[in-house]
Image (cartoon, rainbow, N blue to C red; front, side, top):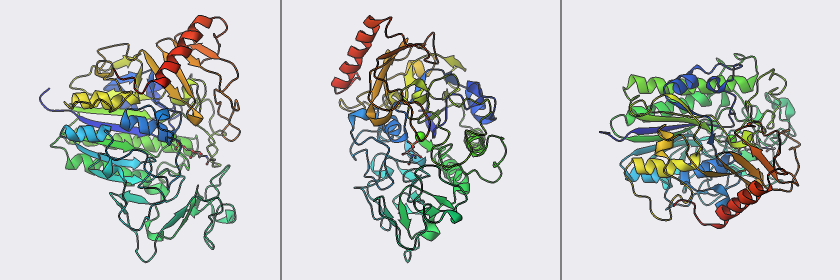
Length: 487
Ligand code: NG6
Ligand code: CA
């Protein structure tokens, strides 16, 4: 290899294993994701570490399982930064290896010391944990503040109209409309939660006042992020770069640009997946235009599995037809079953990787060790404690990958899987989440599934294989008890 390869991670939000064409989905056309799959490897057993966003992203960027950090839970929009400055992260290590590093899109890993003053240059941003440039939303598209952050600053803020944000239960600002009190102002109605401050005709989680000029327009978000992502690649075309491009689709509220609205027949959820596919295409076209395709590693994946009603009445369930967002997998977002964490996982690197399909067991947690090694950077002893250098598996030279993988559902409850079995210990909690209808995976009983024979986790083999249950249970306890799993 003459020159270090560029790395782009395109990371969807709540996209399921069955949502895109290359994984067998037929309801939504995803020509650009499929184009990426055709020029690279498609992993059938690629995992996020968690069935929700913040913990997954924490692992992606730190190489640490999320349950090691008690704060790695779904965060409010005014949460303190989760990754402490000084932590060795995927971007900080790549920067050490000479890479320009940038993030565009959804952050959801906290800012500053918590409850920051949005009207001053912000401390504790992505710039403080290894990114040279950052253009993000602080949390999610359903949480305040509904503004973009460029580096340390809110974009387009009028100092005469400062922003205030609160997540206190009774924090409604007098005179500022909420979904609860002013449903007549809504263009997208909430189904559960999401009844607080209204921005752009959509009520959100949390309260926000001021910053009118800075408020985002959801229907323009895909274009805004795509433009910045493309600009980052153009600026750094002549040096190794790492871009973490975190899409907001298909997370709620699903508000596509008008040119995508109504195009899929599946309602907003389908339409924003089509829009996300367009974003992937913009990036692939940019690499082609700049002659960067061959030596750029492009990864496409999702932070967790799919959900239909995640808090707005957008008819995702009603218009679903035969489409199965999780494909053959059981469960979805929030779930301990594979639908929660087994996600689309593509890797293209034409200079080094022969296109195909891989059954290797791989996880986002492995990116830090793998790409630090590829960049020629030595991992400090205590860095990325759960990250394995899986370059051979990720480039298709090893067909096995990991021996063992831990994933989590809600409340940092964990399960373990190996090359054959998934073991779910007994966990307290409802079997189904009342609001989303998704299956939790919690049960009074031990669950054991043979993923080689039973991808849909239909038959609990625990009663027949007590010895496997004992061994898997012991392995899970051992991982949880150890401070690190990286050799
Ligand atoms: C839940 C929200 C859901 C979504 C999720 C985070 C409610 C009732 N539900 O608490 O809408 O925002 O958090 O999603 O508020 S994630 O993909 O960022 O993890
Ligand atoms: Ca998510």
